[in-house]
Length: 130
Image (tube, rainbow, N blue to C red; front, side):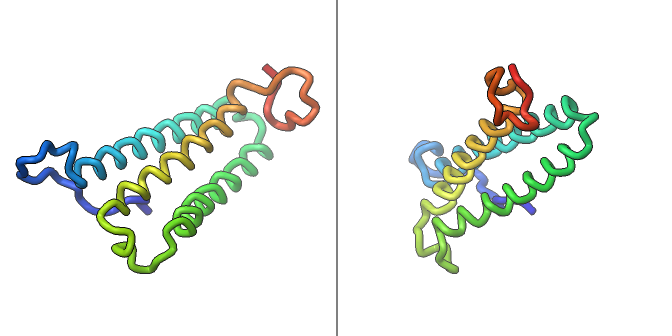
């Protein structure tokens, strides 16, 4: 399911589009989509790099599914109202900003499997040493 639904198409206005709430929403959506794309690229690189470690990959996939549930639940905890209009016209932008921040943190976590952990770190686990 898409994290963001709806169409935020341009409208005619005398205010520059990027300064309208729709424009700011679109920018926030674009930032989230860029982060989500990077997350998927990093995740797919891990799948390739660790292709021979079936146990790790199975557990990584479970962790990623749990992370998606966490991301969505965290956003709901920040914006718990059933009627999201309670947060005003900035809600779509704020939701996208929050999702982007959470996603960027996950990217940092996943990149440890690609770049490695400092050699000698006895807690490296499945994350290889640099």
